[in-house]
Length: 147
Image (cartoon, rainbow, N blue to C red):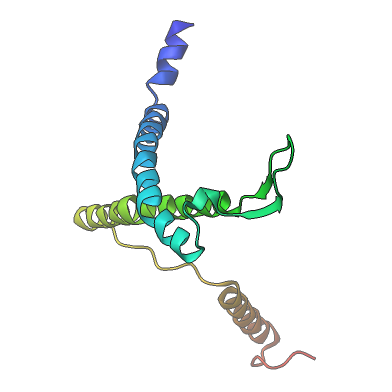
């Protein structure tokens, strides 16, 4: 039982996932700081709000013992900005350099890039031409339009 657990933990993908979670948690703090410190103030100026998270539309004002009902679209905008920033930074800081390094390693190893796969239209044209050539050889005539 412990042997199976040890094999599971020592698999490469489990360790890679654990590292990704830890790095992601640390990276979230950086992006949150960027959104809170840079983007929220700019958006707050645009929408005349003191804080982006407080930006919204008051549907019902507070009265008596009831709280105000506010449609807080600022929270949604802040979350979307944070998501887009994380995606952009992950792409340009991690994916693009890793693809470049992989391409360099493949070049050093002498691996050549595969030509792009033919499109459906190119394949169909090739099949049509082969069928026309077969018909011409089988009939003893040259290929022409089919009746």
